Amino acid sequence: MKKKSFLSCTMLCCIVLFSTIPALSSGDGMGSLNVDIEISATALHEWMPSVTYNPIENEFLVLWHTTGVREEGGESMYSLHAQRISPDGTLLEDTFSPLTSVGPGRRLLPKAAHNIFTNQYMVTFCMEQTGTGWDPFITLIESDGTILSGPLVLSEKPTNANHPFIAFNSTRREYLVAYNDSRNGEHDIFGVILNEEGSVVKEDFAICTAEGEQQNPFVYYNPKNDTYLLNWEDFRNVSTWTEPGDIYGILLDGEGNVLAKDIPMVDFGNEDEGGQWLNNIAYNFVKNEFLVSWMDTRPSMENVGIVGRIIKHNGVPGGPDFTLVDDAPGGQFWHQALYLQGKNMYCAVWQDGRNDDPDVDIMQPTNSDIYGKFLSPAGTPVGSEFPICTDENNQKYTVLAYSPLMDRLLIAWRDELEEEVLDGGGSGHVTASGGNIMGKIYGVPSFLTFRVLDQETGDPVKGALALVLGRTMPTMKTTNVGGWFNIAKNAQPEGTYVVVLLKFGYHMTSQLVDYTGTALQKTIQMNRWR
Image (cartoon, rainbow, N blue to C red):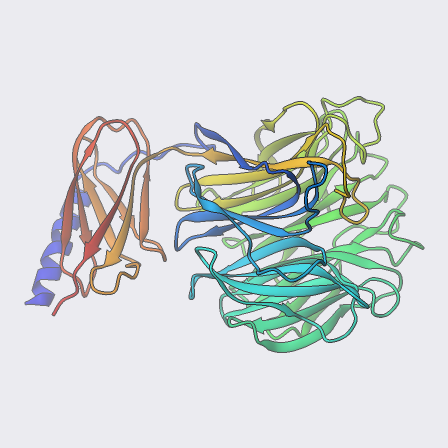
């Protein structure tokens, strides 16, 4: 009887689907949604945001660290902070700290990776300690910010570490944390593999200990091949990290073993070499390849710009490097690129000097902005560059994350303020200044967003088939890992719509919704067969 009921529902669904014209798509580009967000503007100096998307809760997590104060006599803090943000730009609950108080030592550069199986984040950061300088730490938190464990140090050796980066291995349910440290005298790249509870699976191991200094590792996990691609700033060919460097890379298997080393991210050794810094990696899961990119000062460029290269899944370059951003006056750098699932293109955002004083040192700007552009899978431009924030003073350190469900980006940056720095305020070699964390939601408006939950357990129902009928053409969707489906706004007329849900093992469920021109978000429960 249950099987017959399911087949009947499926046949009805297919008849409706194939006897109608498919619903219109939302078209190219990111849509008309454009929401400015004040993420954090406290009496502290906010620095260096990072952004992670959570597909279970359909929300973003922004992390940053603070240094110094703006009010004379106030407490000087070097602390970590976090804010959950919905895809429409709403701040969810209050700002929280991802770790408990750990004393007066400074804590810097937090980054998170989300575990879709536990719906938890592992956060990595560096903390100052007596005798060792800086060390890499992790803490484990629930999706709502509840602290589960930590802070836990990643290395028992004095490391003087910096620039931690974390990636989640969805095949092994593990994390790789990479960082640079100076245990050998000069900066080298090391890593640690941890399980999802935070226990060490592979103790800190050398990733690159070449001559000279290596720093600022970036990590991306490839689930198709169970591998990690890393790149970093490399100064083996010069005497110090302040001189023009290169970008090197390595491919590791899921256990941390080397598959390909000294990957030539940049074409080295030619007259037009210049210097390369501020590296990034984006992964195209459709073509199973990477777009690596970096800030570049080669003489043949019009300005300081951003250069990229395709790296195949086995670590082999897919061709020569090429320019991504170099058209505007001033310098373009401090960027992040990301592959947009479903759109089959990349989005890059960067710090831009086109509106700054042409004589200013690009590393000491007075009026830098945030710009972006879309790129094809080959790295060629799609459309024109677009401004994200062109307010007065400096906007710096831009990052982004993407919600494939909502087809939206959260772009975050530091908004520098013109004010006297009373107590500290800098971060290592970064010049002291006051600043806030700001952001923008950029993407496609919604018509209807549903979350489907199991009535008995409250867990998300993944893979349910949703059919939406009403005063427009029928639309079919499938719920994601968090039980969500979303339909983009596409001139749907106001009126009543019916949502029908089907999944093997569950009773067919339906719900009427009234659309008045404003985006709808609903939760619906499905009952299992008995």
